[in-house]
Length: 58
Image 1 (cartoon, rainbow, N blue to C red):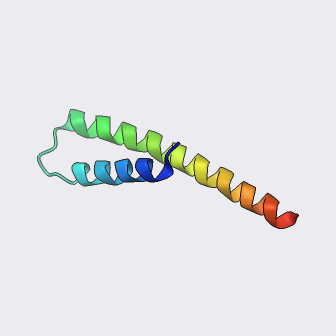
Image 2 (tube, rainbow, N blue to C red):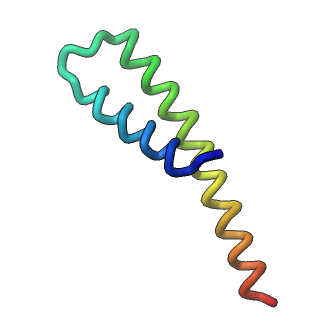
Image 3 (spheres, rainbow, N blue to C red):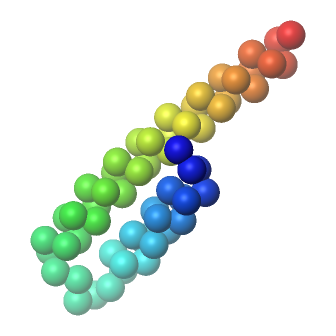
């Protein structure tokens, strides 16, 4: 996973979804993609946090 690349993609989706003339179908597609990215990024952050906590225990 490229964390920065996925964060940039999420930001791009966020900007696209702000468009007032975005069709509902496209909005739902973008929302679904954003949810998937958010879950993936959260999992990555959670794993990184666990790694740091384990290292601090040593």
